[in-house]
Length: 262
Image (tube, rainbow, N blue to C red):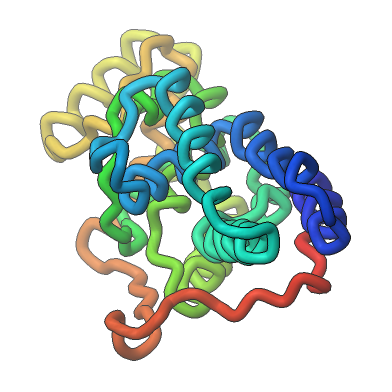
């Protein structure tokens, strides 16, 4: 997605025809994160269509197409300026996938650990009214489901200054510490279905706010057990990342078109 964005923005700088500018909307149609972001923005600023966020992807696509038509009511230069502003806001709100390369490479146990960490030490989220059916679910049953949900959760994190990058930096540091420590349940055999089920039941009885975890197989239950017990201290002592200064200031960084988004 990052390379597609760079190519798009470079071409936008030289556009002279309105028919070419309309291609910008395809950038958002073809990426679920981008579509959810723009449909939410359009619902908030495109008054002719009301303020409700679409409840399905077809409606979201239709909305951003109408939003594009609304923006084209101005002349070409104003239209290009509006598109630049939208893309600048998008860059500020949504971290590029390249910032998560280390997360894509870790194993299933690491993914479970990260999923538990961001719930025990939650990042500060910004308020954005979202359509529930456009969002992915908030709990996981297997490791394969975790990566896109982590992206979604961090997409909703406040974008003030370097808060998200700071949070990610601490997350990576804590993960690096986790992989060097002794397994807190080293005595538990992941193939012991009865033992894993007993320990997991004990954990959810002791701490009731684990609705973001719904492991089914004994293997996933074991991964969840290790992740929770490895993060257990965060329930009592959180690693806080404070946002910078006041929230009522403009949170958007100045956009520089020549800056690479890689």
